[in-house]
Amino acid sequence: MKISARNALKGTIKSITKGPVNAEVVIDIGGGKLVTSMITAHAVENLGLKEGKEAYAVVKASEVMVAVD
Image (cartoon, rainbow, N blue to C red; front, side, top):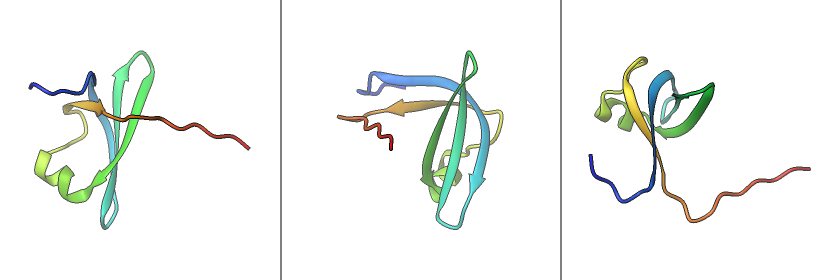
């Protein structure tokens, strides 16, 4: 796989929670760290995602926001 994003974190799919439109995919990247992504349910099917399968969490963003009360 070649990709322009510099933040590609390889891991194992820990869980997939499907809704009618979107799905929450949790990827275990090791060291007790999890990355969670919301993608379309269609993308889950297209990519053949299953728990236990290896996958990459690819982060491509110009900004990351953090907020507190």
